[in-house]
Image (cartoon, rainbow, N blue to C red):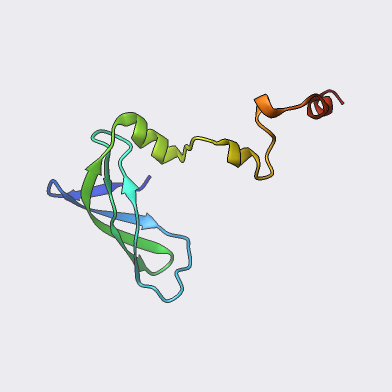
Length: 105
């Protein structure tokens, strides 16, 4: 996680590795959050630097509780039935006897 350098109580700057080709863009908006107290969130402006580096300038705009912050940081999402129908295995309560036969072979 890149270190955040606070500028006062509301603003920050962050130097990051950004190994993505942006085409001809020099700046984009991003999203960042803290994974330590006070779990603040922001949508900074990210400015490209040479050699796939970038600097993010932002203002803290929101705050999450600990569970929300850690879930967002790990990319956790709640799966729905539709997710299983996109080529995944069927949910356990929808498995038929023929489907369970594959488990034992």
